[in-house]
Amino acid sequence: MKRALLALAVAVTLLASCGIPTSDQASVVAKKDVPLRLLSPKVPSTISTSTLPSSGTVQPLYFINTAKQLLEVPRAVAAPADLELVLSALLRGPSPTQTALGLSTALPPNLRIRNTAVINGVVTIRLNKAFTSISGDNQILAVGQLVLTATRQPGVTRISFVVAGVVVPVPIDSGASTTAPVTAHDYSTLLAR
Image (cartoon, rainbow, N blue to C red; front, side, top):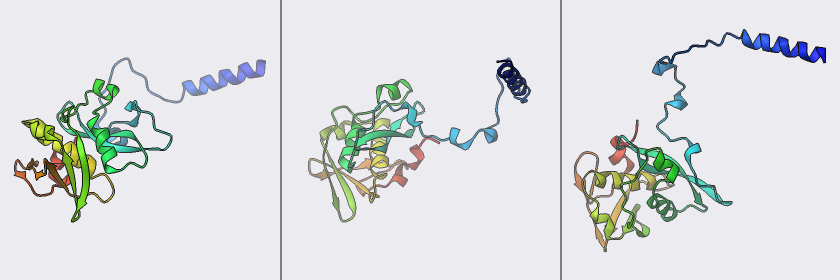
């Protein structure tokens, strides 16, 4: 017993003299001294409240942070996670925990995906009329959410949007509006840095 107490006393003494500085006041750490993984714009996976289905996968979705920028957020989706399933997860919006952390969506709650199709290498997303009701700054953010989420799927690089059988114009980050297929690059300035 005395040996155990002596060993514990030696261990405490050694730990106490390790040289870890202490202070009663907060101090500023230079950005260059912060580990890169802590500067990442991605929301840590620990904020996800959804549990991974037994045959599921984690997919990147894009939501809006408090600075009105698009932020990649992991979301558990049942496998196989095809484009429609991933976009449906996006339409459900951020989880309650993510909302409490300040994340939101510009996608209206009544927006529905009719279907998706590949035509001449372009993914066409067919949506209900709720898509055309999005206005103002929410319009580019909503389109950015859809495009950035969709283009994270394998083989998806260009997106076209159709409502009621008609290709609809969408805004891009340059301020222009286009009916041409759009890419993730068209929304890169909206990404959280």
